[in-house]
Image (cartoon, rainbow, N blue to C red; front, side, top):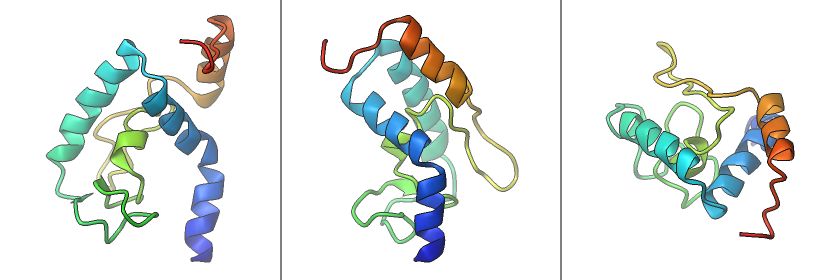
Length: 111
């Protein structure tokens, strides 16, 4: 459990980014997420039952990292953690994404 909490804490910015992008939908991000999700759906590591998910009831999730796919695929600064090599890569770094949202005056309270 300590290992899981440590991983969640380390990746909290990426997790929150994916959650935020799930609620505040942008067409460009959705296109990327759908493309990534198609790759994940074909991956043998996908966990559809939830036995490898960090949080119960968040399946489907990545069987390698335990992240909910709906959030992971919407995190532009995340990449696929497949042990044989990433099947999809980060589009931007976390810092670049933060700057992008600042530049476009992103405000999640306004549509």
